[in-house]
Image (tube, rainbow, N blue to C red):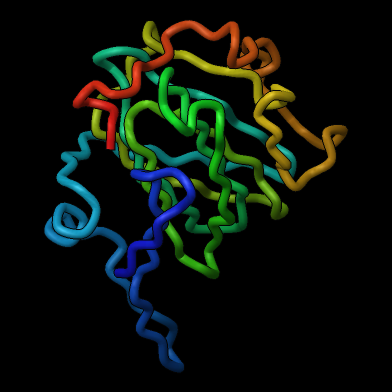
Length: 191
């Protein structure tokens, strides 16, 4: 796999080696050994999968405190725009975001460290999205910020009239008002 750095240190795109022929293709989608050596040691404990239709936007979510999660995300069917926002107070990148297209065609994966909010928008008729987490989900420790916070300047690549949100995702605070953010410079969240 190749590791592609983004504009925010610690957030990286993984590009697997694809071996294709007339039968189809083969790729190694996960290797603990390679990930530890090329990105950083992480022990994933939970895999999740969602299926969504065009216009569904999930986010921007995070888990708070000791329940915070690093994630490794990918798309196995369709196309999504994946977005991560630095929510580490004091970080040089606080409030900045990285976005990338993940698709069944490019096979890219995105690593999201602890200290970031995460969301994605479905750009294809439907998409199947998978992700690994290094901490178990804790509903009582959910945090979120508004997907359309103007201070973030995120272009979700779909018209706002087409955005489909859960009832919960319609009511998240702006970044400036969000609770449960992280502090930059602690060993746990600095890179």
